Amino acid sequence: MKTSEWNLVPFPCTSNIVSRRSRRKELLGALRASGGAVIVDFSDCHSLNHEDVDLMLECLASVAGRDTKMVFVAGSRENRVIFEVARISSLVPVFNSVPEAMADPRTADGNRAPNRSPIVGSA
Image (cartoon, helix red, strand yellow):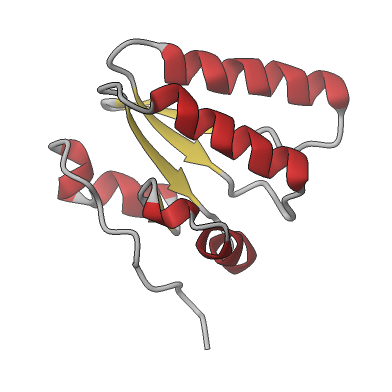
């Protein structure tokens, strides 16, 4: 799904192996595309496991040292906490929602986006 200059790709967190493989292939393909800007959306992921963390690290490795822009959308408070604990947010900008990621002017012009945005509804 294209959104202006961003390629929005859902993170493959499904338990269905066939669907997960297909989405994993789509995600890594989008990241390998030269010059592609990618929003990896975790909004449909209600929980993350060790395979998910491995895939997140694979995503980070695939764009390391390249001009590919990538941001993560946590989609939930639980995912945001996992990103903070795993220190993912120190490596890639993390937003709470897709509109928030796309609205940030620093993601559009290539500068590093902030990774400390507040979580809506947090106590």
